[in-house]
Amino acid sequence: MLEPGLELLLALAAVALLAGFFDAIAGGGGLLTLPVLFIAGLEPVAAIATNKFQAASATVSATAAFARKGMIEWRSGLPMAALAFVGGAAGALSVSLVPQVLLQACVPVLLIAVAAWFAFTPKLQDMPRRARVSRSLFCLTAAPLIGFYDGIFGPGVGSFFMLACVLLLGQQLMAAVCTSKLLNAACNLGALSVFALGGAIIWPLALAMAAAAIVGAQLGARCAVRFGPGLIRPMLVVVCCVMAVKLLGTAGNPLGEWLKNVFS
Figure 1: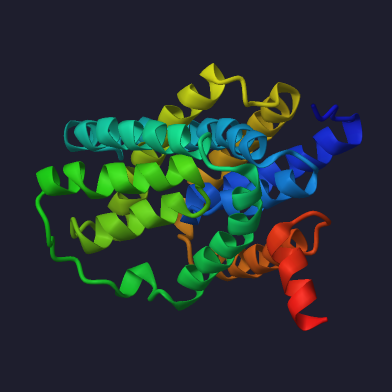
Figure 2: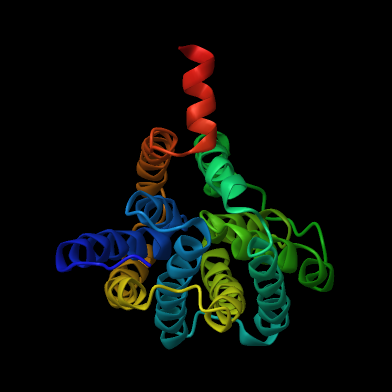
């Protein structure tokens, strides 16, 4: 079990504050926090579980901030949130069954894939606004599937929800941001409930990061109304790639060791 010192707690809290700020605006805060937890020495399941606690704190805080402004459509959003919760719980149950060596190898690849998505997906402002599926179909498909991804990995899920709301439901950008926060909070809580029951969370780290993430989320939610996600996306791409390279270079990472052998 990792014994976190004060220096580590403060460093991770600072990252969580920044991630909470990013996540409230554009999603993808987990691109910062999850790799840092791996680099800090946590085992894969513990890192994902601990990250989920701080992520849930940030998304619930951001959702509350939008709700206070009357920007959450509760009647249409709650059924989707319920299915996202189920998807998140199912994903968390699945990650506990995956061998840790496989997770160590897969996480850098997933980070690079998410970074590529951020880099090459068209800006949300340029997307069409015509609904392509009904809310019922979205509720039964996109909400639980993206929620499952959040439970089993997570980084970028807020942006995936935002993109789905724009492309599939035809929502305007600000409405999509608000809906994505509600669904993100729901799947975070679904995954968190599984991780908490399984005892996988490193609580000192999780609590320190959660407190900082809540502050960051409140600041980000306020900036989201004014500035939007355009500034944050390029920063997330760069950080994601740097973290993936760092993880591949960590001693004991099977994919990194394989790549060294191939190119040596």
